[in-house]
Amino acid sequence: MNRYALFVAVYLALLPGVISAQPQRELRWGGDAEGGAPYVEADPADPAHVVGFDVEVAQLLASGLGLTPRFVQVGFTTIDAEAARGDFDVGLSGIEDSVARRSRLALTIPYYEFRELLTVRADDRDRYRTLEDLRGHRVATLGATLAYDLLVDAQARNGIIPITYEDDVHPYGDLALGRVDAVVLDAILAERGVRRNPSLANQPAALAVGHYVGILAPGRAQLRDRMNQILRDAMRDGRLEAIFRRWNVWNQDQPRLYARVLAGASQYPVAASSLVNSAGPAQVTVWRVAARYVPALLRAAIITVALSCLSMALAVLVGALIASGRVYGSAPLRVVLTAYVEIVRGTPLLLQLFVLYFGLAALVQLPAFVAALLGLGLNYAAYESEIYRGALEAVPIGQLDAARTLGLSERQILMLVRAPQAFRLALAPMTNDFVALLKDSSLVSVITVVELTKQTSIFAANIGSWVVPGAMCAAIYLAMSLPLARVARRIERGWRQA
Image 1 (cartoon, rainbow, N blue to C red):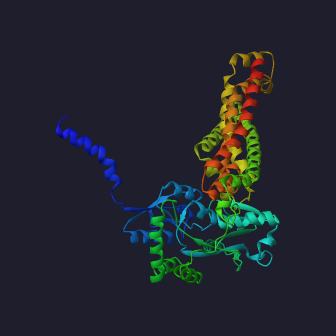
Image 2: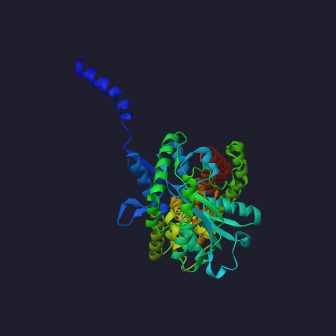
Image 3: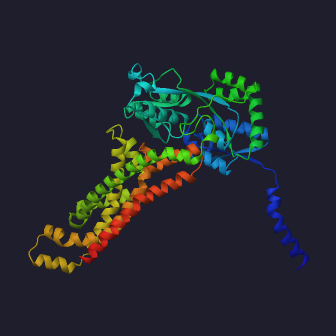
């Protein structure tokens, strides 16, 4: 090996160490742009960039650290887990302080204080003043939030029915439409919801008080301490106030919070999660929390099974009709049915669910479960119809001619000759589709149906890990799908022997 080759080999061997020794030039901060203004949203003037007061807080922190901020898009319900993984340096997206988060992450000092408000229709302002007045009624919120914990506690005390949403816009829209009876969210979202829907009103009394914080991985305490000093300096010189005033969220709660922070208070009022003992995280293990969540997971699993079975029954019925129409129908009917199949198969199921539940709300207000049932059933009907059509056309033409020679009508041929043989051919693909539908039912959480996967994601967000919740969810899905596959194989063996 000559000297040049030796130099190159040594350089390449040392390159990873050289790169890792370079000083960090960016502050990677995680947030969910889907959460929208005033936290983080795509800039209407330039969708490639984000704007919001948390965006400006991130810029403030980056400037104080001598770094360039870089936004990392993450889902709100997974932001804790990704922070713990180190996928970004700090998470900022209206993230609430809680006992559970303190037990597993490094949290900055609070930089904004908020109040949880109850929003009702203006006509119900005198009827629903508190959560106690909503006994047995549907109350909307976001999952894995302080508001959600309040509603879970209220559910245990007086039978309130929590309805979880993926965003903060549709809860207020559904409240105005009468699909829910109230919404509980923080004051920033509540006030924006009322501005968008003049028929709504916020009750003045706060249900709880919380704080927004930044979250970092547990091992980043040193970086967290530097950020805390930057935030304290910004509280003193008015830079934080200027940010919140630009976004019209400054109020008299903030000076009191800043006074406590600057006075050196080490603890701030924080609501304990309904799943975590407020006496301290040391008294609660993941397995104890998991045990408390088992009933909720089982209830969600029942919803998943019921929804899947009913949707598959609808898919089989509609699919058989479509397949029969395409095989036996007139030319115009075949064109219409073919167009239906191609449109449904060519568009996402998620989009179809949104259209059925939200898009048609002005014409017909479908209950969430009914919209989920129709969405899954009509979507899978398109796929089932292709299976049945192929099975019908796979029956030998000679058998059909023989049946006609015997004087059987086309309907008799279908019912007595063609359909039984087609069913035998279609049984295995039908089973596969049912298992797929069972898993695709997880998509209905976007229209407020809390099925198994949604309940698991709320569980995981509360404990900050997907390991135990994911394992429990997978075990329940296997317990539901494996017996189905076993029954289907037994039916197939019986048909082969017949």
